[in-house]
Amino acid sequence: MKSFDIMSDIHLDFWVPMDHNIIKLEKKTKLFAESLIPDNPSRILIIPGDLGHYNLQNYWCLQHLSSIYDYVFLVFGNHDYYLENGNQKKKYKRNSNNRIMEMKNMTRNLENVFHLEGTSVEIDGMYYGGTGMWYDFQYGQQVQGFNEDELRYIWANNSNDYKKINGFLTLDKFEEEKSQLEEVIGRLDVVITHMGPTWDLSPYKEDESKHNSYYFFDGKEFFNDKKERIWCFGHAHMELDKRVGSTRFISHALGYPDEGEHKKFKQVYF
Image (cartoon, rainbow, N blue to C red):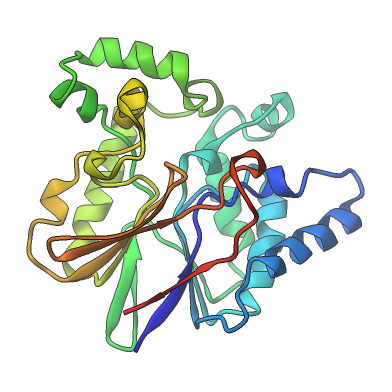
């Protein structure tokens, strides 16, 4: 039986707040990373986005995890693009893509850490791959009957993405990510995205359903091909292990400290 460990939405800097003492911060970050690891870890770790807001802290976390796991797969979530303050906006020239590029460059020396962007890796005959994906506002259009301008207004007034992500347009990003997923999904046994591919899995109640427009995308075309696969995602801070047709959907989010208890990585067997 094969297995992997998984956790999305770690939001590292909420659990280990930033500290001007760099040596102390590195130690606390690595101790926290260690606390997430189960007693008998798998060879593979999957992180479906939103590791944290600060690249150096993210690097320390990945450095430690890559010393435990043979393979660490991650995709970029929306928070991985955030420019949290004026210093970050200045450092990255008000372009979130510059922060992503720095993160990829920082981890080049971690040879078993893979940032998936329309790419895949074969392990023991199984293909693991994906990309972060993005939302497409389709829930609001298809289910609620809003037009695109109305949804942009709702999104801008309810999501920090509007304020903290700079350098690209939302629907342009969706098309870019979708094309990357199209390139790779046909061969994948384990799909990894940050955004969930169907709002049918949403945890949001009716009075919160507006969130579905920027927490999920319309990805039905990607899992109606009858191929047996596992789809790992995050973003909605939910706990899910559910089969729909030939696809097993898995989400295991840590989330923010005020959302619940400290968890360990979930071990998935298949």
